[in-house]
Image 1 (cartoon, rainbow, N blue to C red):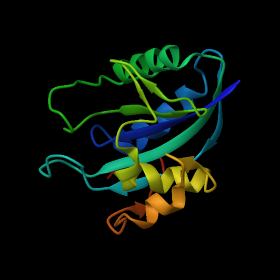
Image 2: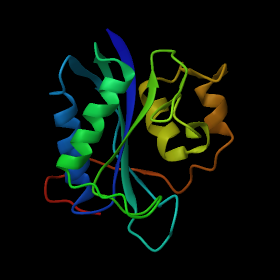
Image 3: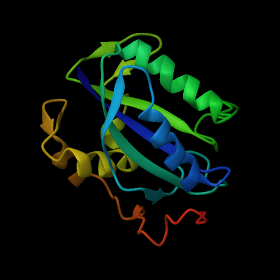
Amino acid sequence: MSLAYVGLGSNLDNPIAQVRQALGELDRLPLSDVASISSLYATPPLGPQDQPNFINAVAALETSLSPLALLDQLQALEQRHRRQRRLHWGPRTLDLDLLLFDRQALDSPRLKLPHWHMHARDFVLVPLYELAPDLMLHQRPLGDWLAELDSAPIRRLTDTDVTPAATI
């Protein structure tokens, strides 16, 4: 079994529910089991600012799938959530990014591992650090990358925030 980390994000159609549902669906992927899940975080959008805030999380998956087979499953899950790719960094019902797959480095037209530029994205590093504080990224401790970022806009959601009826 390989250990993969998947970033989740949503800012449309009840994003808390979108992310929570996707976390459950990740556990039902073929040859894969969710090993751990971060808290949910409210974060400002990376791209155009005229869109709602995102809900982000990271899940650790134990999987027997190859990286590209897992990517296929993640993209199919995005499609089941009606993901539309109209605007780069635009609003979306569900965004799933394969961040890391064991210690593999991959640079193909479809997939780059570790995920491109994740070291500079607090909405990825904060929940990833929650799951794996001893993780190394590009031969540096994850905490070192995180210390270089301004993660002030990120807010960890509380149990009150994530009740089934809650929306952001």
